[in-house]
Length: 495
Image: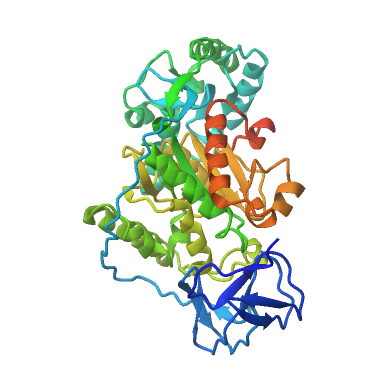
């Protein structure tokens, strides 16, 4: 296994691919460099002298400003490197002039084609509460329905949440929009909308957000209106499960896939292994006519111009500028630093500044043009690479991807996490240590790129096939554990 990697020819740091002891001599571009400190795996060390105030360069871009002189071979991290980013910025559209590649070779998966033409990769029956007050009832309905689930229905899931009442303005709109998105999601063969009756987002209000629906697929129960809600719910669930069980998997072109992309708990290998592998996957799917969605806007800060200049046209560029600046203004309005350092787990793994994380994070977008920019809760309607407004929080962002139409979420991690989302959530390890230690969480190991010298192109092709397998019914680890999480983006006042 190689000890280090210099990602770009202009970099003045290298990344340790495994722990490097103090006093170890490595050869970088023909020059011998001896480490003057222990360098943990995924962390950076200087390969050129860096003066206080100089830019530290990784991925060919500045990731921060040195806070002290750094000698060759020294460790560079939070003790001597700080962000170099400011707040609201002016941007200029400088398009790359590229065009997306087209791959005429077809790929297929076995999916569920719905009556409206949308395609699901699961055939589940979902219980969607309109308000947190009925969460316990939803869970009780779920538990009983699971015991009589017919063949052909993959799972019965209640997506509980604490919202739906005592909310105002945009906060309330977020809840209604995302609930409607889930009700319309093609991974749900049928849906029970469970209401209380006195909430702000009661069933009659929510119907305006749902739009047209098939009454055989979507049914409603307002529990204040009935004598004993469990009896009514059992009857309705039996009808919904019978309806959903009629759907069978059939061969579907991969161009119908919509895949969300998210990272969390990163380490210093995230931008070297898992994230660029997902980027290559994204380019492969886009070339076949499919759709990918990149989110977690705060973790684009510092690398946003890379995405802006890949926008297909100036209108999308302007939407991306608003995407970035609206989130910055949200931070400012709430008295938060825009460029807060990464989480403790990120820093432990070798990520020092937000630029460091963002330049790794945006690699999940590959090299395709940006074809769409989505507001939070907005369904995707343009094939190709899309950007979605959502925060960095893992559960909130993954839910937002599902709400916008992703049938599967790819989640890269250097730290590991057991969480799920409303759709199959593929955990992709950046390093082999994590993949081996938490094999009950991790679905796919990109750490092999550095641990076993497996070419990234090979791993990307394997990931593409793995996604087709998941789309065809293969369960991810979180599904095997029965995990299904759901989190709405909370903003504003609670009454």
